[in-house]
Length: 113
Length: 119
Image (cartoon, rainbow over all chains, first blue to last red):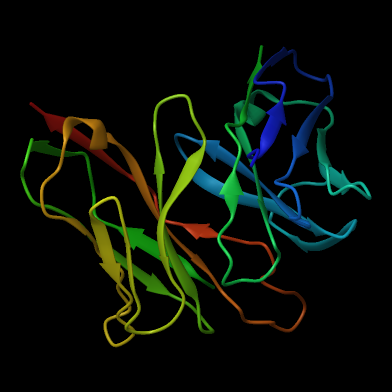
C-alpha cells in the first residue's frame, strides 16, 4: 500500500515569508506527527494531530502551526521564516497508539535564503 | 523528561564484520522502543521495534533486545554489508500521560549513528 507522501520535496524561501508543507498519511492512519531534522539539533518533535485535533506539541515558537483535515491529511505552516528554519521537515503517520510504529515520508527540504 | 543516548559515531566497518550500536534511554513510563534507519536523501524507515521488557525485535539480520534493567536497546548485526551504510536512530515512544500534557505521537530520538561499511 502507498506510504506517507510529503509535498513538495524541496522549497526555497526568503526570510520573512511563510510556507505550507503537506503530508498525506498511510490509508487508515489517523495520527500524523511532524518533526524537524537539522544537523545541529537532530530530530525534534513539532506536533501531532489525531482526528483533526492537536494532541501534543513540542517546544517550538508559535510561528509553527499545523492542522489536519477530515481525510487525515495534514499541513504544517511556518510564518515569518528565519534562517534557522532551514531543515528537513518530516511527517510520520501511525494508528495513534504509543506502541504502534510511526511511518515516515521522505521529507520536505526547506532552505531559507 | 524522556531521553535517548546513542553511542558516538561515525562507525566504520569492513564487510562481514559484527555491528553493535549502543542505545540507552530514560523514560517516565513504559516506553516502546524503535530503531530507524535513514539513507541519504530519504526519510526514516522502521527497522525494528520492541514494546515491552525482554522483547526482541528483529529484521533483515538486525536484532535488538529491550532490557529494562539496564534501560538499553542495543542494535546488533552479525555480518554487515556495504548496503547497510546509513544513519541509524534509536527512538522511544512513552505511554505516560503526564500532568499538563501527553506523550501522544511523540518519538524521542537519539542523535543518530553514521555507519559506513567498506568492501
